[in-house]
Amino acid sequence: MITVFISGGPVMYPLLACSIIVLTVIIERIFFWIGIDMRRDKSLVDEVLELCQDGDWESVRIKTKASKDYIIKILITGILHREFSMVKAMESAAAEQIKRMRKYMGIIDTMITVAPLLGIFGTVIGIILSFEALGSAGIEHPQVVTAGIAQALITTAAGLGIAILSVFPYNYFNSRVEKSALAIEKYATSLEIVYEKMVNHNGNQKRTKNES
Image (cartoon, rainbow, N blue to C red; front, top):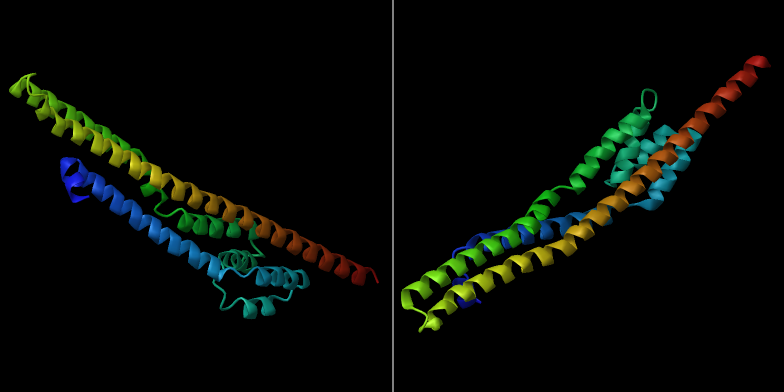
């Protein structure tokens, strides 16, 4: 591998840097999503919605105090601002969570684009060196061209390899973000509906008492 790396020429060093950056980001995102999955508590989310339907805000506060579920955090933000603008509060909290989920995704996207371009750049350099060697040694010594050709092929393969191997985790992480966004929308809408029902129910009860 070291011999192949050296044969690839100077462009292999930025390609190596790209591969290290991509690998680091992928590992970080894997641990991030594992943490997200470990902190998810769907039963607690459903319980919070039931408590909100009864207007039992104190029980909601107690039960969610230690929760690190991102959906719970968004719902609690909406509950805390229920008398002002529940929807906008949850939208702001959701945007913050989505931002965390998309963190470093731009780096992977950039590497997917840059790595093949660097490979092509290395290919061009290798071909230039091949023609220079051919011009110096003459057509009767074609073996001197092989080093440049090898450099061209190695850098192209390395650049494409980095890009191809980066596409799969990139698409996976994007799908996780989209799935999480749908879950946020689902539960935020449920909370909004539950709260409106509770407010309307309490309002109807007050009017009935006043009429009596």
